[in-house]
Image (cartoon, rainbow, N blue to C red; front, side, top):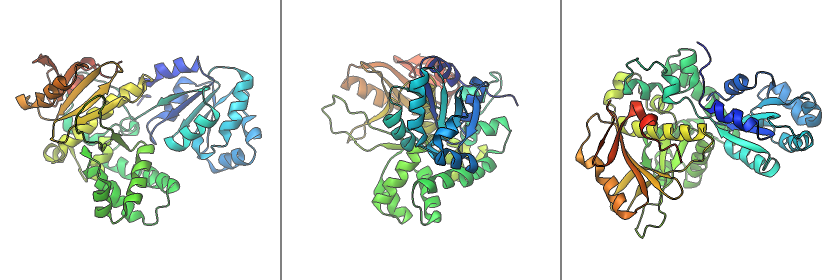
Length: 392
């Protein structure tokens, strides 16, 4: 299969004309290296995953970087964070746009180094796995929601036509567990495996660290640390509550979402699309899918994460609130194929609470998009041609 074109390419090229360094972060196997090789084929490429390369970079950073007089793509830069200060010296001297292209898969280590060494010198792109439109390019193909949720969006599954369950087994064993063990001292891997599965079972729910810890047999502090690492590695998204300017008692805890429904499905032992159709967490996985899609489209355009949810202490809730600065978009997410009157309840409540709502939407599991009661009813298949919440 040919290389899958990525929406993020356009913004990345634009940044390469404006900044001396481009830093691309995202989960393992989201396509960062492929994107770099596609956009910058003339650049030398080097990966710090290679032990010999990494040792050279650690022991002689100046000598290592001198091998690239025209710049380079440096993969997994977080493996040798000390390189960043040497890169700063080089780009300050060269004054050349798009000189170094850096990738990394662990955002807190990488972003800390960038803020110290490359502030003002680098553009930051976040690349998540494929969007729906990138993964399924045949507009005439009849794809089922169940297949989409079960398969997920990691590029290799589509590029190599892999079985999603087998691909995710390899992914968890090779990348997730190995990488996270490098970041935190996991003494009991079996407990961490249980923790991952428990998190998958709580996708779409308000995060309760005490409950997670108790069910896994770890303390609150450890649960918090493990959640932070999962978020920093782009495995999960913690959707924070929106509570600006509301004189209401609101829920202040974040909601937990897996950024890839295929990974969550694997951890939930959903083995095919037929099982997905009747699974009790299908609705929660659909929520995860819509939130992840919205986030992908914002990141692909170089925009910040402006996504929240709303919930007060008596249960009034809106699944997704997009903050555009002076106004908001409000989104309810329903996996069913039929729209019911109670789907508008949370949206109506939030519209009464604030006059900042620009548009209200219900995204659902049906095929048709239309307007009903001044609300945009949007099919999951036409999400970004009808929703527009990825745009400010």
